[in-house]
Image (cartoon, rainbow over all chains, first blue to last red; front, side, top):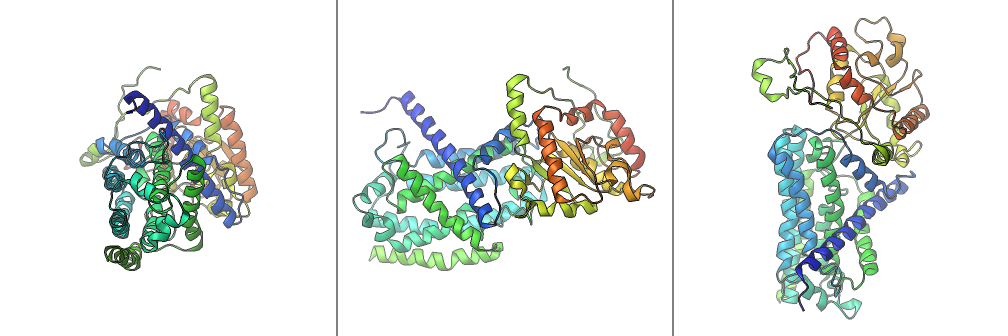
Amino acid sequence: MATPLLVKILYSLISLAVITIWGLTLGGIVRKIYARVQGRIGPPFWQPFIDIIKTYGKRTAVTHGIMFFLGPVFRIAGGIGTYLFIPAILGSTIFSNFSVSGDVLLVMYFIFFGQLGMALGAGESGHPYSAIGVARGLAQMTAFEVPFALSIIAIAIQYHTLNITSIVLAQQGSILNWTLFTNPLATIAALIAMLGMNMHNPFSVVMAPQEIPIGPPTEFHGSYLGLMQTNRGIFNAAKLVLYMNLFFGGATNIFAMVIKTFAIYMISVVVGVSFPRFRTDQSIKFFLSVPTLIALLAIIIMVL
Amino acid sequence: MKKDNRLLPNNDVPDVERDYFCDAYPEPVKPFQGFIEKFLNWARANSLWILGFGTGCGAIELRPLMTARFDMFRYGMAPRPTPRQSCVFVIGGYASIKTLKRIVRSYEQIQAPKFVLALGSCTINGGMYFDSYNTINRIDHYIPVDVYVTGCMPRPEALIAGLRKLQELIKQGKAEKANEYIKNFEWYKANQKKVIKDWNMPDYNW
């Protein structure tokens, strides 16, 4: 039975609200963890929410042109688009979102889309640091897309489908059915690509506040920045949900989703607190060597 | 509040550069009423993003705030590298005339509501540079100041106390100096132009 359109929209809004709140909370928890590792008390875990309220509450704003307006809009459209085509919880009517056949390709496109929109918006602000940040960001993104795309191809060959729901269904039953165990090479390559995607150390050179004041969003303020902060929550959580679905067997209830996404994010965080920062050329060289070879190997093994 | 249709003269900007700058006159923004403003003020107070203007010796006291010993992050304060995104402007000690130009420029680029915390005796009365030919004595003749932290130099604890005081003021709705700057715009501009001789920027840096 098809769900009526209005009900579907309501479900999507609920799903989006839950993932926004979870994404922002996750960001706050990670800040707290970083602080504890550095021996500080750190901000409360609800700090991202206060920051967002404050940035939306700014009284004045300036603009640098139409693309400057549209940059954050594209960014959040990319985040929402990424999330809305991933089934967050298997078998749930509210959290199944708009999963269709071939949605892996759509999601991969949406991951790219927000960054490109942001690049155009930041470019119009005319700030030199924005331009440097955009150049670094796009270069690094192009590099980590290679192992990511290759490992997605490996999974597509393995499961003979590009539909996320089918991929999750194929992993049900036992923990040994997870892609993590059936196709470990693709998982490793994709997880390394995720380190770049999440932009924690050692791949944080794009927004490094110590080197290029905050990078692409240098000129963005007030509501523009608020949109981007909201997007950070949605986008982060959406990527984690995607990884959970593709490699860690998906989730059948919301608690499983929360625990699994948290655990996957911790990989990024543990690497982030332990390592210093790569330069852009180093990170490109890194992504195009070991993880790319691992992903190629995964494809070859799956084809054989 | 009625709309201000005056334009800034921007007399000192060269003709070829006029197009690059906005010549709209800045306007005070009326705060919301009642609980909305209280709620926003609570959020503002608990999320102070600091732009450190580190040209005076006081800048050295800002760094320890980010370390494990003083840890300003637990109060929701964070350093922010660009004036567009920050809301607290910390003047780190004495301001030479050359620096003052940049202070004014950065201050005007911060979006309202914005707060200024002046650090050290030099910002209050000139301190040990009171008779210097190229430092200004009172910073609040040039930009409005919310909180002063006295001392030469104040320790990081004093700076934290100052920031906590600023949080209190914001929560009480008493930190509306950004609007005062606009209301007394002519007076501030006259003061600034009196000391800054090579004024080659627009009259208000949007």
